[in-house]
Amino acid sequence: FALIVFACLVGEGYTNVPSSPELFCIFNHNEDACRYGIGVGILAFLACIFFFTVDLYFPQISNATDRKYLVLADLGFSGLWTFLWFVGFCFLTNQWAAADDVFIGADSARAAITFSFFSIFSW
View (tube, rainbow, N blue to C red):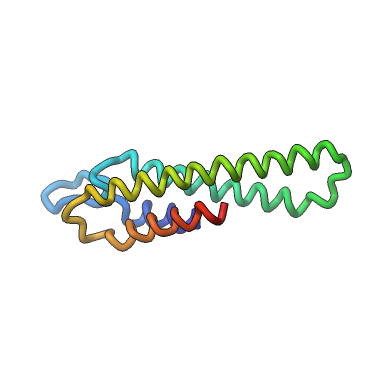
């Protein structure tokens, strides 16, 4: 889900008016909304890769204390990222509701909002 949110915002999250070459975020011209979604999406994807690698090597870790800290780190990170996805969903939804006259990239914006909502439950 994180990869989809990231790809939607990078691919069609920025647009311009025909009279200007300057790009702006389609979420109510709020650059922070696009940056937040991209940042959380990229970090979540990298964290997924990291924790997947940790899960692969987990049976080979013989020290119970190290296993305990890895499990607690995974649990804590998942809790934090659940909260960050919730904040991202609320932020993107709020900015999308305030946006007006967005035609190009509207489907990508809706997909980013939808998959940020799904990410709350998956984390």
